[in-house]
Structure formats: C-alpha cells, structure tokens
Image (cartoon, rainbow over all chains, first blue to last red; front, side):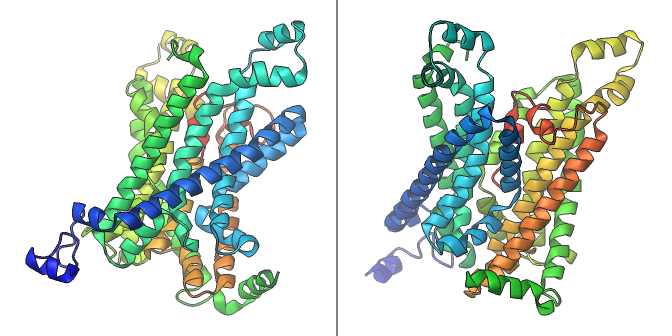
Length: 232
Length: 252
C-alpha cells in the first residue's frame, strides 16, 4: 500500500534517491518512532538529573562541614568530568549491563559533578550576617538550612542545574553505545544508513529539547525566587 | 567479575596494541587529532577573545558562546558533518577516515571555553592596575603585553585546559560516526559483543584523559604569575568567580 502510494506521487522526500535533509513527510510517517525516542530521551535525562540531585545534595552538605572532604569531593568530580562519556559508559557496563541504568548512572555522575559545585558555591554565597541574624532569631541548623540558606543559595544552584540539564540532554545521545540513547539512536541509525531526514530531525529535536528544558528551569526559578525578579 | 579479567587479558596482550587498528595506532591518531584541533582553535579563538577583552566589547557574545556550545550535542554535530556532502567521511591525510569532519567538530567545540575564558581573563584584570599602567606612560600595546596578558594568563590557561578535556572527549565520540581515534576500539568492541575490548578502550581513553588533565593543570600552575597557595583546586574555585559556567563540562 505504501509502495503504491509512493509510486503515485513520485519518491517521497526521504527516499534513498532524494534523501533531503528536511522532510516533513518523514516526521509524519515515522512519528511513533520519533515520539518513542523523544520520550526515552526525556526520561533518561530527567532520571539522570534526579539521581544527580539526590546524591549531590547530601554530598554537598557533608562536604561543607568537613573542609578536607570538600577538596576530595571536588577532586573526584573534576576527575569524573575529565573522563569522556564514551569511555565512562563502557566502564559502567560490567555493573549495570546494556540497560538504560548504565546511561542514567553515567549521566547522573556528570550532572553530580556540576551540581555539587553549584551547591557549594550557592551555600557559600549566603552572606554571613544573614546567617548570624537567623541564629540570633533562634534558628537551629536544620531550620536555618531549609528556611534561610537553601532559598538564598537557590539562584546559584539553579544556574548549575540549568548547565547540568542542558549538557545532560546533549550527552544522552551518546547512550546509543548501549542502545539507550533516545534521539541518539535515531542519529546513529541515520549515520549508518545515510538517512539525512532522520539524522537532521533528531539533531534539531535535541537542540529544541535543550532550549525547552532551559526555559522551563528559568521559569521555575522565577517562581521559586520571586525576590530576584527585579534584579534581573 | 569475569569481564574485568578479560579486559586485563586484552590489555596485556601485545597483539591488541600493535597493528593497523591497534591501541597504539589509535592512540597516536587521537593525540594528533587533539593537538591539531587545540592549536587551530587557539590560533582562531584566543586573539579574538583577548582583543575583545582588551577593548571590553562583545562580552555578551563571548560569555554566552559557552552556553550555546554546551547545548549543541557533540554527537549530532559530528553526525551531520559526516553525512553532509562536505566534509563527509572521506580520508584526510594522517587523520584517517572522516578525519576532516572530526577536526572541524573538534575545533568548534574547543572554541567556546577558549573564547569565554580569554575574554573573562582580560576583563578581570583590576582596573586600578590598568590605570597604573596608563599612568606610567605605557602605550595600549605595552599595557596589553606587559600587564594585562600576564595577569590574564591563569584564566586563559584554564580555558585551554577545559578545551583540551573537551577536545579529547569529542575525539572519542567521533568513533560513533566511524571517525578516527581510540573510540573506535570501544565502538568496535561493542559492535562485535566483545565487551572486554570495549572496556579496554575505555580504560585507555580515561587514563590518557586524566594524564592530559593533570599535565594541563601543572602547566596552568606554572604560568600563574602570582601563585596563591598550593591548593590543587583553587584555579577552579577562585579564578573564574561568578562565571563558573566556564568551568563546567561542555557536553563531553
């Protein structure tokens, strides 16, 4: 049926003979496949970011108490981020196999390195006199952290989260090495088969996804820190 | 873990190091790629960034180019360059198949940290030092060469270091589009279900990355005209305050 249809109207713009870069016909015909890849991409990214935050927060809080641990944590995170993503994923394979977990953990480690730094910088940016005032008002350590320090650290932390989010979106494509790369799988397939429409569509979607996530995070930051609206 | 034993055996086997597609050949290929791309990016990006920083113009562009660079997926750009009619996946001298496409991508990804740090480094030279230089009767060229450049050098060197890490990582990813370099050992291993080979390639890539990073950190310390104590991380924590975007991974 599809062959007949194609014969009626000439070769479609993504046929092997035309192979155009931009082809809406491709998006229409393969929208299920594209949506699946897009959803996988988003899920892997969000899982990696969640993992990064979940580990970075306690790590940063402990590192803040113990200066010696802080340099160890920062040294470790510099080391992790020095390792290229294509090398980090194989190193995780013995533990997690060829699964989405490999990609999530690998990208989570990269996100972690950015987030720990951002959290430490953010907490350090809280003015000392504010802390003293809070202590004078009878705030304990826990309440000081949740009510005073975290809100004030939020702008710096959110800046770090934006960096982590955007680079995680871009890095998820490399997950195609273990066949869990979201849009990266389409890119990989596109290169192997010289399928330009697939390649370009996936690449554009990647960039769009990064921009959308960045905008969402900016809006989230506006909502969470309404007092910075005037300063920006 | 059996896989670890197999990986060790692969790494100890001399056959896996020698030969046309062996580890040594791939390592040299990737080092050549990395060095060429880094030098090209420095020749292109640093004069522009230092000049803009000297004039104090174009700051928005210079600082944001890093953010844009991070949003562009390395893999997607490499794939587009290889699939395009030019540069395509043709042979390029000693750089091997798809070498030119890889080189272009590497240079593009090395530019953002170089430009951002070059600009920020120049802008961070204290204005009273610049005024003192003017007051001593230095010409703008003298001020640039003898005052601003030495003071900016640690931040500029930190940008070069970031670019180096970035280029090495990107050169590894080039293998996903059949480019040259050590990544080929990894992707070939995975394609043939020979995970020991994939692991071995990853180990070599990671180790060389760490060695390059440590060497770059040592160079960075050496060019600092005002060493500020022995803390190994001060360059990350101190020299680029508030513009820590420049210190973050850029889609490696």
